[in-house]
Amino acid sequence: MISIAWVLFSLFGFLQAIQLPPQTVLLNVPALSVLGDNATFRDIATPFNPTNTTPPFFQVWDSRFLDILGPKPRVRIIAQSTDGFEFAHEAPIWDPIEDQVFFASANIGPPLGNVNATTNNDIFVINLKDVKDIPGPQNITWTQVPINPPVQVVNGGTPFGDKLLFVGNGRENLPPTVTLVNPRPPFNSTTLLDNFHGRQFNSLDDVRVHPKSGAIFFTDTEYGFLGGFRPPPQLPNQVYRLDPVTREVHVVADGFVITNGITFSPDGNTVYLSDTGSCCFGDEFTGFNSTEPSTIYAFDVDPQTQRFLNRRTFVWADTGIPDGFQADSNGNIYASTKDGVQVYDPTGVLLGKIFIGSNSANNVFAGNGRMVVMAETMIVLVEFAANGSLVELT
Ligand SMILES: *[C@@H]1O[C@H](CO)[C@@H](O)[C@H](O)[C@H]1NC(C)=O
Ligand SMILES: *[C@@H]1O[C@H](CO)[C@@H](O)[C@H](O)[C@H]1NC(C)=O
Ligand SMILES: *[C@@H]1O[C@H](CO)[C@@H](O)[C@H](O)[C@H]1NC(C)=O
Ligand SMILES: *[C@@H]1O[C@H](CO)[C@@H](O)[C@H](O)[C@H]1NC(C)=O
Ligand SMILES: *[C@@H]1O[C@H](CO)[C@@H](O)[C@H](O)[C@H]1NC(C)=O
Ligand SMILES: *[C@@H]1O[C@H](CO)[C@@H](O)[C@H](O)[C@H]1NC(C)=O
Image (cartoon, rainbow, N blue to C red; front, side, top):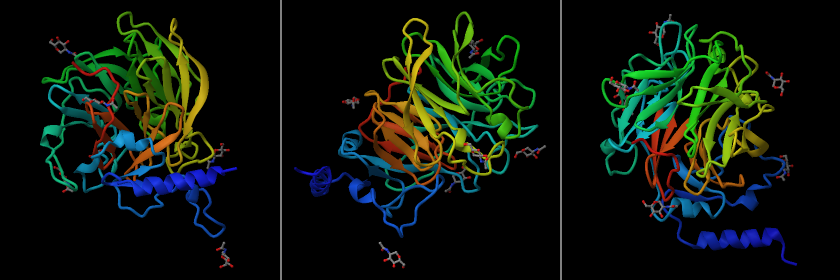
C-alpha cells in the first residue's frame, strides 16, 4: 500500500519541479509536521515563517493557492508610517468610481492611535491611481476625511448603495453608532442607529450588508472598554440585524467571548463570525490568552428569518486573532491575522498566506485581482487572480 506521506512527498517534489510564480514559497507541509524534540516551538504572537523569506511574500500551504495567485502575483507595501502610528487599522471600503480606499486608524490611545477622552480616531483615504508600477515598497499619500458630523471611533465599514456604511465604537458616553457617510465632499453623515431600545451598545466592531436582503448585520463587542475609552459593557457581546428601512433591530447570534469580524458567503447562505476572546489577558491588552478563542465560526443564514443557525467551527487561526475578513467570488475566506492574511477554502482548509510577518486587522478586495491589506503601520497591495464578492459602492 502506498502511504499518504509518500504521496505528499511526491506531490511536493512535483510542485517544486514546476515553475513557481514570483514572491511565492511552497511550504513542505509533511516535513513541517514533525519539528523534533529540540526544535524551538512558538507562541500565539510569533508568526510562523519556516522559510526565512523576507516578507511580504506568498506562503503556499495547498497547491490550490497557486490558482488564487495566478501566474503573476505581486505583493508590495504602498504606504508606511515611520513613527509607529497605526494609521491603517480597520474599516476598509473600496470606491470603484475614484479607485480609492477609505479606512480607519487604530481604536486605541497614543502612541499607536489617537483615541482618548478628547480625541477621535481618523478616517483616511488613499487613491490607488497613485501607486506606481515599480517593484518594492513605496509611500503614496493618505489624506484625512472630515466626516461631518463625525462618527466616534470607526472600526467597521462596508459599501451601502452610493454611501459608506460605518460602525463606530462610541467614545466615553458618546454612543456607538451605525452611520451612513457621503463618500464625496462635504462628507456629511446620517446615523441610522445609536441604541437598542434605549440602551447603548458596548462598542460596535464590524458590519456587512446581506447580499440578497440588503439588511445590515453588525457585531457588538467590548473593545472600547478594553481600550479604556468606553464604560464597562452593559450588553452581551453579540450580533444584530438592522432593517435599514424600518430600523427594526434584533439579535441574530450570541454565545461569544468577544465578537469581531463578520462576512457572508457570496450567495448569502452562510455567514462567518469571529470570536477573538484570545485578544487579551482579562480586561487588559497586555498579551494574548491563547486558551481563549481565535476562531471563525460558520452559520447557516435562515432563508426566512435571517437568524444565524447551525453554528460550527470554521477555522482556528494559528497566529494572533482572525480579526476582519472577506470572501472571494468562489467563497474562499481571507482573514487578517497577526502574520498577514490567511486564506481558507469554504471547508476551512488553509490554502496559503499573504505573509506580512506582522499584524493585519482587515483587508478589502479592490475590484478583480486586487486586495488592499490594512497592516497597521503599513498598507499592502496584493495583485493576484482572485476577485471579491461584496456588492460594490455605486
Ligand atoms: C537534542 O539535543 C540533545 C542535547 O544536545 C542531543 O543529545 C539530542 O541528540 C538532540 N536530539 C535530536 C533529535 O537532535
Ligand atoms: C510616508 O509618508 C508619511 C506622511 O506623508 C510620512 O509620515 C512617513 O514617514 C512616510 N514613510 C516613509 C517610509 O518614508
Ligand atoms: C489625546 O490624544 C491626543 C492625540 O494623541 C493628544 O494630543 C492629547 O494630548 C490626548 N489628550 C489626553 C487628555 O490624553
Ligand atoms: C448628504 O447631504 C445630501 C444633501 O443634503 C443628502 O442628499 C445626502 O443624503 C446626505 N448623505 C448622507 C450620508 O447623509
Ligand atoms: C486565560 O483564559 C483562561 C480561560 O480560558 C482563564 O482561566 C485565565 O485566567 C486567563 N489568563 C489570563 C492571564 O487572563
Ligand atoms: C476574476 O475576474 C476576471 C475578469 O476581470 C475574470 O477573467 C476571472 O476569471 C475572474 N477570476 C475568478 C477566480 O473568478
